[in-house]
Length: 236
Image 1: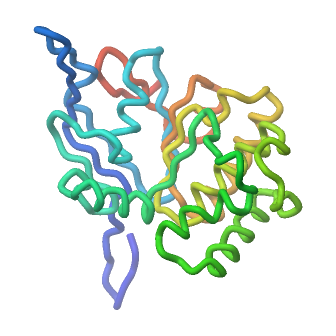
Image 2 (image 1 turned 30 degrees about the vertical axis):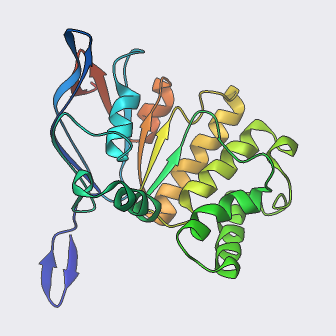
């Protein structure tokens, strides 16, 4: 809670997902990926979602990011029901409030690290000079201040993922959604990315929701939830 004018003001949840169900129709059959899932994430919290392949973890992440729509239920991000927005409205909302990091960095190969990180700011109508300044600052924070002019092909796997994390953070989102962010990295590089996530969470107060197969990392970062047989449960 925040204290304002002598009164206690409740801090809104970053994510408030209530009784969400996602089904798909395949011919005459209806396939239920999960049903009646609820998830609440507070500012600055890290939540890891684990589960077997095909359990629906990435589907859930896409719903939380407004990239897919639930069959039923409600998903609010920072107090806004994102699925009541138009497609263009959701895109603007994602650019402002959410960051995304995937197993594969999805950097634009023809642009430098600096230009890749500037992109969300420019798309959000920030001036080029303002975008450059903010991108330089976040790249320095993730340890790449000397690699600004390098293109993705000139960076190591760990460096490319750090650029992807910087890009996700550059618009100062309330939450970053991560899908197997260390799944394509060797153990040592993955540990470095894990340490970076912990540091950024503690310094910036950003919430992270991460899908991962790495139980060691999941347990070290915060709350662990398991998605199995269509249900989301607290991992013991």
